[in-house]
Each structure stands twice: as C-alpha cells, then as structure tokens.
Amino acid sequence: MKSCLPPDPNPIKPSHQLPAGACDAHCHVFGPADVFPYSPDRSYTPPDAPFERLVALHDFLGLSRGVIVQASCHGTDNTAMLDTIARGNGRYRGVAIVDGDVTDEQLADLDAQGVRGVRFNFVAHLGGAPDLDVFDRVLERIQDLGWHVVLHLDAQDIVQYAERIARIKVPFVIDHMGRVRAEAGVDQQPFQQLLELMRNPLAWVKVCGSERVSRGKRPFDDAIPFARTLIEAAPDRVLWGTDWPHPNISKDMPNDGELVDLMFQFCPDAELRDKLLVRNPAKLYGF
Image (cartoon, rainbow, N blue to C red):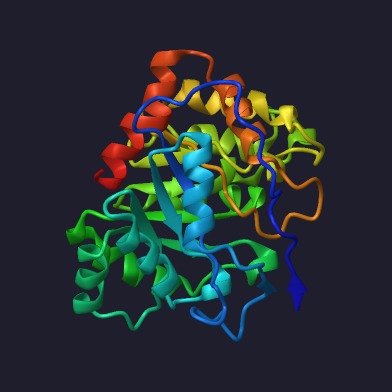
C-alpha cells in the first residue's frame, strides 16, 4: 500500500491578504490514526493531518472558513471530518462519503452536524467508478436535504460520463478542474466538455489542484489558463481550495502559501475573487 508524502511544513506567508470570510473549499483531515483509524481497504496511507494542524494553517494563511472533504482513505467512516466540524464551532462544513445502505436518519444526522454534500470518486488510482446504482440512489436521497454531490473525476471521465452527469438533479461540483492535463492545452476535448458542462446552472467547479493539472513543477503556473477560463465561464459557481495536505502527490509538493498567491494570478479581479472565496462557498455550504 502506497504511503503519501507529508505536506510542506513551512508554508510561506502569502504576498496578498485574503478577504474576510475567505473559504478553503477543499481540504482534508486525516487521523490521527490512533484516534480515527484509516479504512482497511484504502488504496493509500496518508500522514496524519489532524484538526490542530489544519486550523494552524488556515490561521496562518488568513482563511476564515473551510470545507472538509472526506477522502477515500477514511472510507465511509466520517468521524474525523465530523470531529473537525464540531470543534470548529461554525468555521467548517463537510462533504461526506456514504454507501448505498445509508438511512434517511443517518443523512439527517450528518446534515445536523454540518455536512452539506456527498462525494463520489471516479478516479482510476483510487478504485475507479462507483457502483452507479448506488450513485443514483444516494443522489435521489440527498435532494430533500438541499445537498450537492462532489465528483472526483479523471479528465477522460468528463467525456465518458457526460450524459449521466447531465441527468443529475442536484447541484454538482467538479473537483480539481476535472484533473485535465495542462500539457494538452485548453482546446483538449475534456476541458472543452467541462466548459460545456458549466453552462448547466447546477454545475460548479473547484479551481484547485493546480499541482494535479500542471506538468508538475512549482509554481504550477501552467494551470493558470484553465482556472481563468473556468472563472470567466461561471463566476457565480466557482470555488477554490488548498487540497491540504495534498494526498498522492508524487511530483513537487505544493507550498500552501504559494498556492494562495497562485490563486491571485487566477483571479486578479477583486470582485470575482470575493465571489470565488466568500460569496460562492457561503451560498453552497450555508456559512
């Protein structure tokens, strides 16, 4: 089983000050394993990245809010994420992973604890596409809660699952700019399909994961044209996050302060940046 590299322990202080209410709309908490064990059938083992370290990073960077996205290494055991939301006293919201057996009572309990969506992985190295019957059933169940679904896709999946995605009746969020490959350019079919998808008023996208889109060398500025294009295409339905602690990065490990500065290059306009960082996540996650 693969072990992940730890995040950069020395983030730089960003050159720019973030606006009040700025939200890291994609981050994780992992463990600590002796308190919140990892799933036995996980595909990777992350370094512990607990609540205290996430809060310290957010305070250092100037991020007021965050969305804890459940990752596959914890499976459907959402306790580490729920613990962070509870200890954050309103600072955090969550996106859970659930299975097809989840009950309405369990979903209502997750909602009461600050969860606002579910996540499904389609990414090949994390096990590939979910059971699509379960996918459909869960999406039907979350409608009445006003939740959304987060889709973690590889670039080619945007094309392969286009018809199924078009049938989704709840808001849906595409992670990491669809994990398109920067070297293939903005004209590549998956990115053009993603732009077409953004015409759907239910579609949202996270302009994060630059290190996953990039050829792989800091400062990952080859991701800028993709992020800018998406922000221009759907300024009211874009989100940004750090992806801390950056699981499964085998290339250059990002520096989280540099990622904040990179985001200012994505979005030099202050009005659009306020949407990206403050208003859009407040609307989707109910801050």
